[in-house]
Image (cartoon, rainbow, N blue to C red; front, side, top):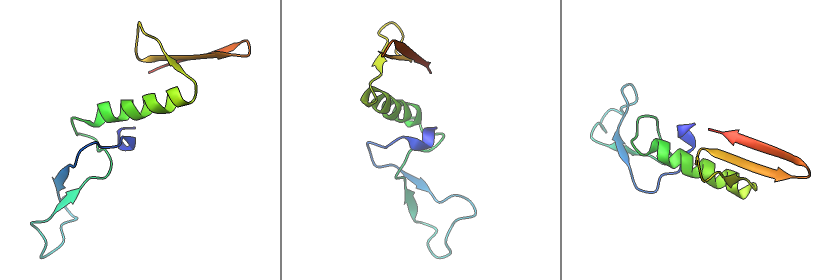
Length: 81
């Protein structure tokens, strides 16, 4: 799930073992998306998840911000993270 987070800042990492290009060992990789192990990964993923659900008509439960709900047509959906 964390791989779907969008990064707000530029983050660079060393080339992963096994993928280092000969003659270019000093180069680094610029991350375009979030990556497991980044401190920002959970926050970035939650922001994207929140934006997606609220744009689909879900509301956030103010008592527990990990609970989303949507009601309509006599039916309801409760989603808990």
